[in-house]
Length: 251
Image (cartoon, rainbow, N blue to C red):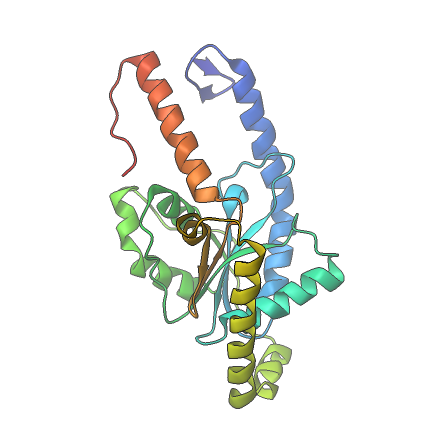
């Protein structure tokens, strides 16, 4: 069916209105997302800032957070994450609405090892706000996404660059020895804290929700990947039953 410029399955114009409302909401919040992305980019050891999650898809529900995909300097993932977390707790009263920091990687380990449809979707929809060159390098290291999105084209939106002198000064003041010690201390403490906090989770579930290595931090305590995977397969089966068209399920 066709309503207000949109095609949809079934006679349900309400879903079109929902799409239009969500698209407008994402558009209105994009300015906020860009502003906070630029704040993040000014923190020590941050090398790339990209928008991810629902806002990168151009659709946001009323309670959706703004999600950021952050690339840190090598060996500085946990230190940069801690500095950003302190900023969020002190100045944003620990609000996640405009400042959800759930995925970090380092600039020398750009390849995402998980190669599911969910991960591919997040990668191809990323909006680069800071460091276009690193964004292009990241896509080059993850060309496997074309197995899911063969016609994928990289984003041409909103990128900006430049390194403020205060950021350079802060990185210089955190000399190599001090930064290395802090990184190790923070990493060990954070892993212990997160494992203790979510000790109720089975090990296989915990490993799906979290990546806590030196080069990758993935923080999805509500098992977002599995929930999305289950919803996708459920809707896929419903479509096949209603249409009689057989589609290959997500691997």
